[in-house]
Image (tube, rainbow, N blue to C red; front, side, top):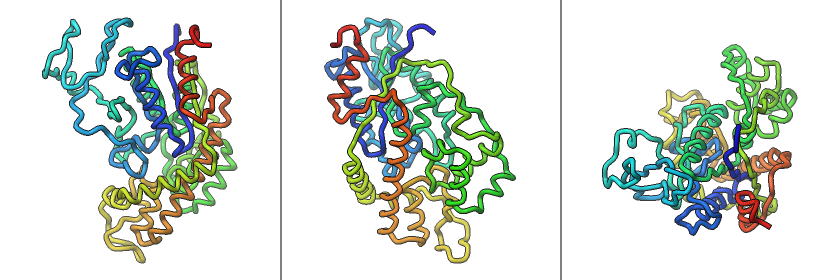
Length: 376
């Protein structure tokens, strides 16, 4: 492979400020933002295994989408020296680069459209429905396709997210074998308790246990299924390939007490914004309730795959009458703090990550990365 495309990756625990930093860097790199880094534009790819789902907005802290955004057409760069932006709204261009005002081709209508946040194109948000299983292999293929398109447009790709395995799969070009479901194994695992499942998984795959949500039965069952079918730890099956990108990895370093305060404040804000109604609206229509269950509310096992994660799971328990709202909120805060700790454990083992405490430190790193010959 020749010169590898440059890729900026921003990681860190939940509530550390990754989204805001990604947008700030993208705007500084764009022509419209003064081209602080000397570029023509930047686009963000979300590496968040929950923001990938449509309708799960409040509970995933999904960035707010720009309102009244006209149809956005992203075209390829005509040549590397062309300073004109490749992000346009409301029209396409002809072969000479002139605007065809108000006219769209059929190809324009079926191109993937970005999720716009503060004028910055985002990819990897609202890609799948909550009842779909969108796994790491699918994310890797999706992200690689978007990066190729972004680079072709002459823009800078910026990956932002806290799902460690997804980031590693993309950056390290991991080869992850597809293991088909085994009904017999699943039937044996499903009745077991969360603690029992997690204990077995920790024994079979200690590294994978550092990242997995131990309260998510579906993920635990799948991880154990893979371990049993292959006879290997799931994390050990991820074989690194030839690196495709020239990568700068930036991690956001936030003091633990401050991070916990941000998490608690974020959860309170989610509740105030209507998380309970969001979960209620996403829950499937229920079948007749089993003994002891609330009428008209589905069991937790009937929830879409994506909604068994933190925030949605606890509110579903509340809606099922299995917890009061105050207890559900405290459980969300506790489980989110534990998840942030697992994220840090995962990322801290990667010596390539440059940890920063302030956006200005990240801007300096990006400037040196993009222009090493002129940086001091």
